[in-house]
Length: 398
Image: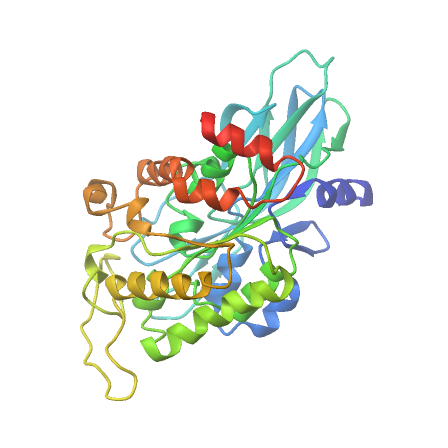
């Protein structure tokens, strides 16, 4: 990669927290590089490198743009052993154009009896046909695949490219689990925080990490230091599914995460979102057991511990989160609670194909309900950027 292309890519990235610069290209990351020394999970490294919500924003008169990329996807034993596509999306002045699908790239196989296996692949070209006459500059946004890590090796077009000026929108940083990462979405713009941000006119950075929403301090510090205008934390399913905390540890951990946000952002609105509906863990605690052949999941009842108390279920987690927010709201007027069942409840089970993750249509349902929520409108009312008022007006008319 030449230096000019590298500078253009770095300057044009949005929704990335950091980048990893290699000899052949730039890989956007959704946590600081410095956090890697704090990871104790290969899954965390993989999830935070997958590009959910990451995009490139250009100002250009180009009628086409090509990204030369090397993607690294993830395979699990129950996934079909067939060629998988990496899906890119684009908009021109907010108008969507056809998604782009490319094959190839590398693949990391996890969960097998013989341990991890890496299969190297080559680069590919994602070509976006943008239309137009080539005479007038437009704002072009290229969304990277949410289910892969993407090394960007080059960018080329039939007209000069410059980094688009950041839009003066409220900056929203969201943290959640796989249900915010949205690997199952059919397109990067089908990630529910992305779709909700488009509806509400917010500039989103999506820290949704599949299997890795465990109130990690490095995630809280990244959010604290972001200078964001809005925070949201959707928490619970990974903690129940992984049986990673009991009531005794969960309550101080959520307080600790929120305290860290408040260290750097004493008045920034925080929205705490409890888990959506998940039949296997509403009243059955974790850990979740996954069949290595089929990928089917089930809860595993565990006995209460005399010191740690009863194990957590989603119903209990919702009660705890509501109580934590109510307690903190007594002296913090900028914290709000949103029940996850208002986004996706028992009546939506038809859009829960694996019993845990919503379908693509289910994710869009969540985005629509988030955008229409009165609680979300109240949370947004505390944003302080220049364009916050116009964004709220847009939310009311959406």
